Image 1 (tube, rainbow, N blue to C red):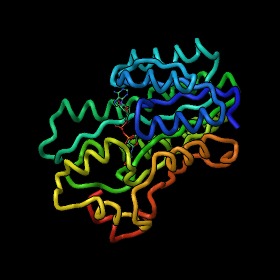
Image 2: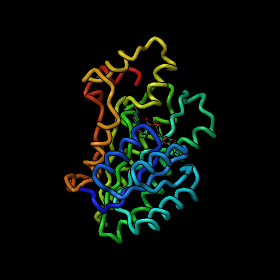
Image 3: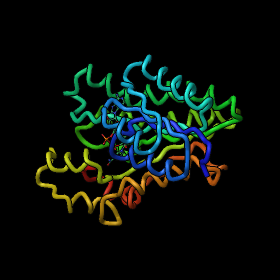
Length: 254
Ligand code: NAD
């Protein structure tokens, strides 16, 4: 489905981003991956991808990521804005620097990269952007103000981009994952601010009574980026095992 298509993925060194890269590699896409973690290079080597070291908090690194992609493959068809940072802390305690970095990486970088990539997509007649938001973009978790705000912003940025880029035949969608069993989430469960919550409690936040797998999130991203989703734009797809289907689950820590 993606043979010969150029796909850019941010934050692909581990977790969901790595699973997204593996899924597109399976579809024979031409991949460009970026991350601040050096492990990204190993992932890229294994998948035959180009790796660009980039700290997405820095505008010049974002520009270089897109420029390197175009230099390598000549065009861009798909952008997946996956990289994000967590910034636990209440609205009263979050420091301004931490707030700004969270918004820069989780919201401003997707906006900037989308604009840069869209200019290249236009030259190929269109494209697709998929943003990795969160159920925390749909409702808020206590003591997570910066992350909640960044993901809520990303949800509505997705709709704005969908409207603004539709005339250029660029579709823009987002997914909103529930709790996915990545290294970072499994660590966070162990070191939780809610030590009374067991892994079973986290699993029970989902109607399907388990955590999601990174590959399950990746399949939703591939679908939204593909021609099979050709009439879908501006959509926010929960990939959450039914978490947001329930009023009761939504009231518990995520
Ligand atoms: P992760 O922390 O395991 O991976 C994120 C990747 O982004 C890492 O490789 C990290 O190095 C990279 N990254 C972070 N800051 C960066 C920067 N400034 N520049 C470049 N790369 C940077 O996270 P994950 O669990 O795989 O989550 C991936 C995405 O899914 C994120 O957008 C996250 O908010 C979202 N999400 C995850 C879950 C979950 O349960 N895992 C749930 C909802 C949403």
